[in-house]
Length: 180
Ligand code: IMP
Image 1 (cartoon, rainbow, N blue to C red):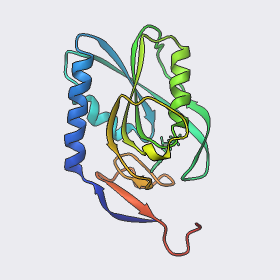
Image 2 (image 1 turned 60 degrees about the horizontal axis):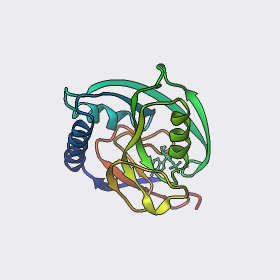
Image 3 (image 1 turned 30 degrees about the horizontal axis):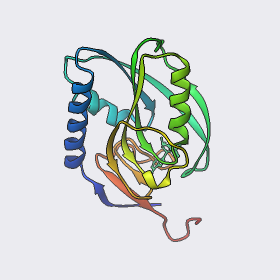
């Protein structure tokens, strides 16, 4: 796979993350909010996002690592928990932070699992959303960018573990010789 030119640049990302932070700040003002990052893809986005949520919201952080069975560009919907939350979410307002929603299978599993733990509320914030690829309905309350069916990397997103460190989002395209 090769990296294309910048698809969403740093400036656009920063502006959108600030807007999301403002919306979240307004919605949760005066409340406590447990922000749950889905490792590893959401780490870069989450670290910028939480700094755009103002002090009227009592933010705490927790992380969950999941692995979806499938190949490098497709998930199967069968999700394995690699690292569970450290804290109970019972009675708390929860915001799941994801890097990207594709088929929705991973997120729908995660939301269902969180709801079984009896939080006060569960919402989702995703940097990117490939809405056209959706296989299952899942509500995303805060979306950074809706994008077409491209495989993207950077700003936390990877292809086979690479390119998470890039400050902008890029599309990756197959190199001649890559399997279709
Ligand atoms: P879903 O279960 O099909 O919605 O897949 C969601 C997960 O697949 C994301 O959390 C990512 O880890 C991965 N994923 C889906 N599309 C992309 C992409 O374009 N780039 C990098 N990872 C992706």
